[in-house]
Length: 182
Image (tube, rainbow, N blue to C red):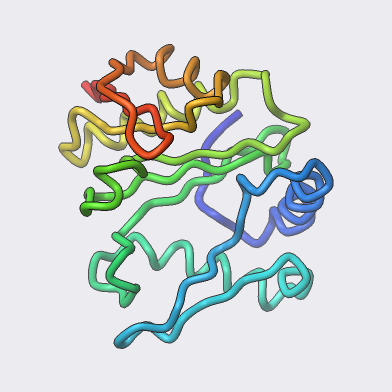
């Protein structure tokens, strides 16, 4: 497994991952649907819409632009770097680093969020991706890193703990861990 920038070459496997998650009743691979606010025109990507290559390319461009702190976005959102987990040329999941914490992210969202498609779970992808993303955090001077998971998400809790996460507390149904990046 390796982390890559979002790219149109993963169109087919990305759509397959969305369908697989939908069939499993899993919304962890949900798509950006952000309201219009200020200079931000709003986005509402759907699995149906992403079938069209131009719309998928628009999603890729949108995700890459989110790295820029000056890119317009709703107030509740911060600049973020999303990378895709790829194995054997196939999309297996994603991980995103939020460059800073606003009040909401500090309370329950954290710096890093990740999701792995159902058929690729239990193979160490999330752990490897988190460890790789911690290197990016260190490069950006983010240390320690807040990573959260749902109370009942035992697999994610194990991923965070394997990366050295130290439990702080539970808020709004989220376990909160601080993970050293260096």
